[in-house]
Length: 261
Image 1 (tube, helix red, strand yellow):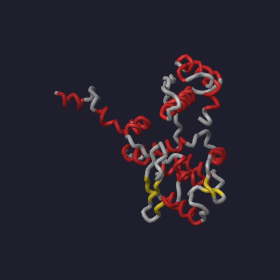
Image 2: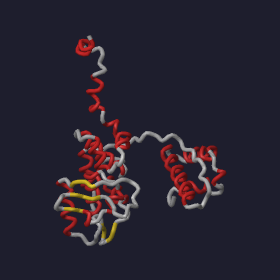
Image 3: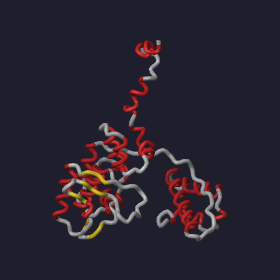
Image 4: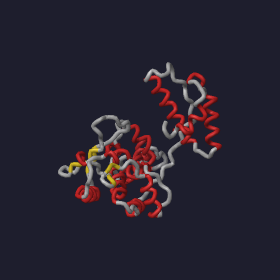
């Protein structure tokens, strides 16, 4: 709530939990939409409020969490970069640590946090494996153990020779907490237009599916513990894989009429 609280607290801060109702949530939605925010932003912010109140119950700070009404979650209109745009983005990075981070993000489909947390003791050059998982178990989102491709191995080899810390993504010998500024600059120099860091993960997933990689394997690379999540997010990018199914439904074709007879 450190960031979301700046929007939430002025509207909800004066109320006790039991006084929060749907009408109050609806008025919050109207306020944020009038301020030019999207329905998706409102959905996320109210979700953070819900999570904070549920946590307060677990910590016994309040007795019961109120129901937090939220608008229907909008469909994600994600942008998928093509191969040329991804190369242009990587080449647009003027700092070595930003370039390495972009190579890892686009070649492993990892989340930003997983890449920034990555340490050299989880890079196995002999086996060609990158372990994105943390041993402390505090990360909520799933992380995977993924093989290196040739570009990643070459980039990691170069970075390892110059490493000054335990972290793979480092700057001036220390861990990098945020790469947003560097990535934004690379996007601007690349001339590819607006794209978010998280859309790099989506782009990697769609490229795997487009190459015919089974969605089960794609889910493993993404670190999804439940394949239903993979289907829900990326199923719409698989129309060609359903062609054999809909061929059965071509009732007007001569072939299918003969089979029925």
